[in-house]
Amino acid sequence: MEQWGFYFDQTRCVGCKACVIACKSWNEDKRGDALINPELSWIENDKYAEPRDLENPTDSDGSLNFEENSKYHMKENWRNVTTQEYGTVLPNVDVLHLSISCHHCAKPACTAVCPTHFVYKDSDKGLVRTDPQKPCLSCRACQRNCPWKSPQFYDDYIDVGESSERIRMTKCTLCVERIGEGLKPACVAACPMRALDAGPIEQLKAKYTQHSESVRNFESDEKSMSYKPNIIFKKKEIKSR
Ligand code: SF4
Ligand code: SF4
Ligand code: SF4
Image 1 (tube, rainbow, N blue to C red):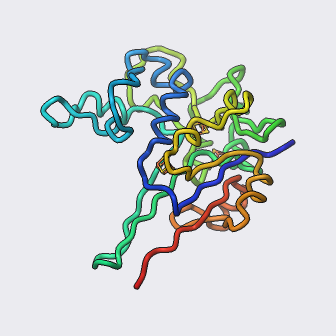
Image 2 (image 1 turned 180 degrees about the vertical axis):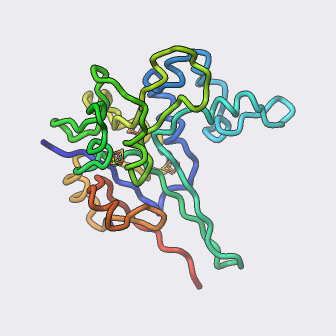
């Protein structure tokens, strides 16, 4: 098995969330909210000029469009970008962004606790995937056990009646169809700063020789790292003068 994973360069990321939008858009047919309610399948590529417009859509008078905005926030986030500010007095201020999804861990915390093996680790690229042939009990054990809360659920947000679709967990697939065709994952391809990369983890480690196993704000205590997340980083040092 050739284990795949991610590289994230914290010195390049500007927190624009193009990666998040690309993931939502590319995987729209696989995410639960859009699957069970087609009206939530709302992304129109020519409607918003910038990724940020998708997160904060406005009306023609510039005010926030709450209906569109709430649709954005309904979507499961297979990829997440967080931002932390540092310092209070110029010029000693800085900001650090972190863009992460599932790390397709070598010893996944999620698969270990899934009672039905709905979430499993594949033997080809080591991807942690879901098996549509198995039931998901919606017990959320996988999400609770994952230090990065990567598995996502959608039944909190919408009234789906008796639909059996409501009980499924969804998660990052590492864009398995894209990488099977020799393409980069949608999030990697969309990043305007080239802050993300994906591939066989040993190749990434050889390519990015100065990498580190963690960065500030990445959950990396002893227990988390025991799951062996397949992600490496380039660290950004905080400005201090
Ligand atoms: S990883 Fe790239 S696309 Fe994502 S927020 Fe950072 S700069 Fe933007
Ligand atoms: S990051 Fe979380 S969901 Fe992904 S493989 Fe690791 S434990 Fe499982
Ligand atoms: S690899 Fe694909 S599924 Fe995973 S976060 Fe990136 S775009 Fe989303």
